[in-house]
Structure formats: C-alpha cells, structure tokens
Amino acid sequence: MRQTFCPRCDNLLSKTGHCSVCGYQVKVTCQHCGHYNIPTAKYCGRCGRGTTFAIRYRKKLNSLLDPFQQIRIKRFFAGIAFGTLLALFAFSSMGMKYYAPEALPEKEEIVPVTYDDSVINSTILKSVSSDLDNYCIDKNKEKVASIDDLKIIVNIMIRNLNHISQRINQKRYPLESAESYLEQEKCIKIDKNLTRGNTALMFFAYISDLLELKYKDFTKNPSYDDIPRFNIMDAPATALKKYNIKIAVSDERFGVNDEISLGEVCEAAKQVAILTVQRANQEAPDLSAPPEIIIE
Figure 1 (tube, rainbow, N blue to C red):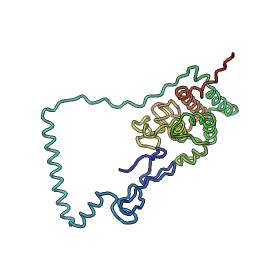
Figure 2: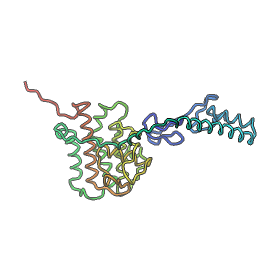
Figure 3: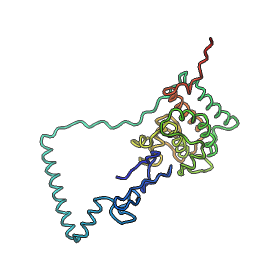
Figure 4: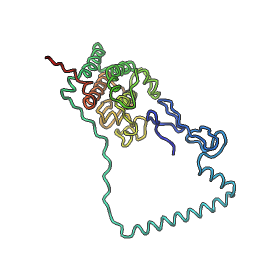
C-alpha cells in the first residue's frame, strides 16, 4: 500500500511519494538488488524484477499461458467467486432482521472562545493586539489587504507566539519568518490583492506548526458549499472554522477567490493569539500569566 502522508511533516505526499513541503522522498528498496524505487514503481529500475509478489506471479503466469488460456482461467475463477457470494447472500438473508441505521457523523464542532481574566490579562495577547494596532494606526482597515500586509501580520504572530511552542510542542515548531512559509507553500499565489483562499492557506500552515495540528484530522467532512471534498482548501477551511478563525465570507460559503480586508486579517491573527494563550493556560500557565510579586 502506498504511503499517503509524509512521515516527517504529516503533509500529503504526491503519487511518487514526494513531499512538497519538506522535500522528503519515500523510497522502496528492491529485495533483489537493493535499488531504491518510488512507491508506485511496478518493476525495479535497475534489475527489472517485479516489486511485489503479485506482479512477479502475473509475469510468470503470462509467460506460461497464452492470452486465450488466461481468459478462460479468469472466467472460471470469476464464476466460482460469484457463485460463492450468491450462496452467502442467500443463506445470510434467511431470518434477516432490521437494524436502525447509525447516525451520520457530525461536523467538526467549533472550539469555544473563553474571554476570562487569564486571557484578557495575558501579556501575550496584549502584545499581539498592540503590535497589530500600531501597524494599522495610519491605515484603513476596510481596504483590501495585500500580500505585504499578510507577511507583516504573520511575522507579528511569529514574534509573539513562537516562544510558547518552543516550550510546549513535542514534535513540530513554527518557522522563523513569513517568507519561509511563502517559500514552503508553493500553492500561495503572490498577487497584488490578497484573497481569502491565500490567507487561509498561510494561516493554516502557521497554526499547524504552532498548535501541532494534523492535516488528516480536517478532511472528514466538507465545511463550506463552495469547497468540494478533497480540494486543496478543504482541510485549511475546516480547521479555521473549527478554531473560530473567521476568514470565510459566511458560515456556508468560504469565498476562496474573494478579496479580504486588512481588518479581517488582523482579527484572525488575534484569534490565533487567543487560542495560543488558552493552550498555554492549560499546559504551561507561567508562559501566559504575569509573574506573581511577593512582598515580604
């Protein structure tokens, strides 16, 4: 069976076993000569031997039997298989009972936002909000955001939130700059005006490292009417909706190619900071709360 996810960064692999995010290449060793082949290779690139027993058996069978004999054998075994299934169905239908169908799986629930004192008074949240407000102080938040605005806002999150992941995370850590994420995410188009789709891809790439999210956890049920299942935007849109990071146009329609305002990008960044503070409060309270001053 071909491996679907990258063992290094958990991103989707291509048909050839190549990861477009970290560059990892899955190889399968030939048991005969030791040559490294891609996972979908049927025959070894060096010795020409079949990579699986089934392929080697089929090749040997083809050399012994002519095409007409192979057709007769296939029909014979197909008849046996069909007769066996028919008999099993006939016996199993005797005394059959009706069982109520199971309920369909529910969609991902939105993670609640808790604005308690530990979040409101967090120095981390105040720092992120202050940096975002200073950046927007002489700008119109209603204007369409640009790729430069997105890079600056992501860098603000990186500057204020990365130190938490370095203390809490077990396997994955965020990159050090927005430029690094743009180089990693080749699917993000650098246009003059920013779209909601590009913003979602950038935010999902960052919070996946920040919160150690797994891509496969957000591909079960489509969350928006305009994003089909298995589309490149399916998992990012579902994850952002679950964590209440509002980049979509509405709850039903995401608007992948629609433009997004500077104010919406800033509010989404604040929500990422809130999620990070909530996680820090649970796993490492000393990271989000100011130090306690004891007067003797």
